[in-house]
Image (tube, rainbow, N blue to C red; front, side):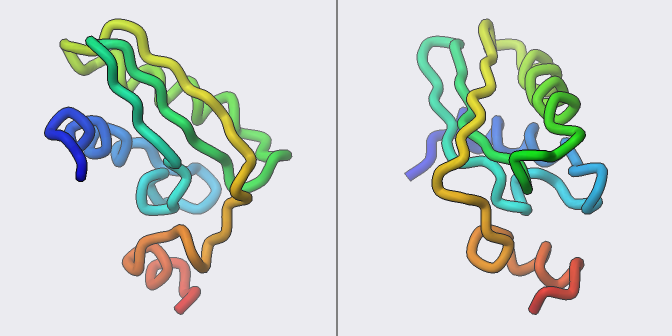
Length: 102
């Protein structure tokens, strides 16, 4: 079950589009967890590959997007590599259709 705050965070994260694939990071399945504790927020996320050349840019965009929420005081991004990102199991159906994976 998600909270209203998690839903708001998820919608805010949908504004961040992976520059290589052209799809937002939520629908790509890159967000593994959202931890909210009294205005402190930690996003556990991955990238499409560990060698992603735009990883730093995407992390900065996540931080910037979360900072726009008035109740967020201390946004953090934690990169995780396990489980490994898999487009077939982690992307939304809409994202798969857009990329022609289905």
